Structures are given as C-alpha cells and as structure tokens.
Image (cartoon, rainbow, N blue to C red; front, side, top):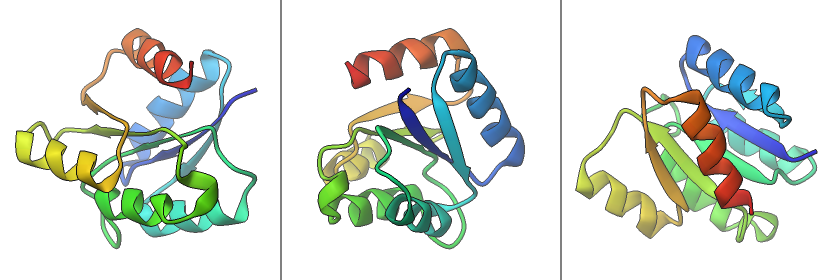
Length: 121
C-alpha cells in the first residue's frame, strides 16, 4: 500500500484529504504543520508522496520541501503542494524548492486521486 504524508494546518482539510485518499486505497498519515511533518518524515519509514499546504504556522510548505529535499530518502519522493495559493510567483518558489506539482484548493476528490496516481506512476 502506498503511503502518503498529508500536511495542512486545517483540521477539516486534513480529515477531508485523509478520507479521500484512504478511500482510494492509500495509507495516510497527517501532520498539522511543516515542523511536525518533517519530524514524522524523519522518524517514519519513507513515505511514497508528501502532500502539503503552503501557508502554515511554524514552518510553511515551501521550507518543508527544501528541508525534505536535503534528506537523502526524500530527494526523489514526489512532493505536491495542495493550497489556496495560485500566484505564478509562489508556484515558481515551490518549483525552485523542489516541489513536484501544484493543486489548488478547493479540490475535486476524484481529480486529486487521479493526479496523485499519475505522480506516483
């Protein structure tokens, strides 16, 4: 079973993402911000994909991408941003940090599952 780390400071968004992905057969672990996600990623067996919000307290999603890309186990793991941000500048910052893709909230559950399926291969 593919393992996904879903990171968002909104409890309801974490629950929605987890329910959507679990119903599609993924094992989902959630984290409330970048700091917690980074700790979980380092202490867990490697995740197959990280799905992260951008705007979060304590460590935002772009810094999380940068920190994960510095860890050998996460250099090639897909990291997809799921956020309300849609500016070209923010997308460029995320790409420069090493993000694999970008999905704008609110999301359609079927499209999210389909997009992540394509990223995971």
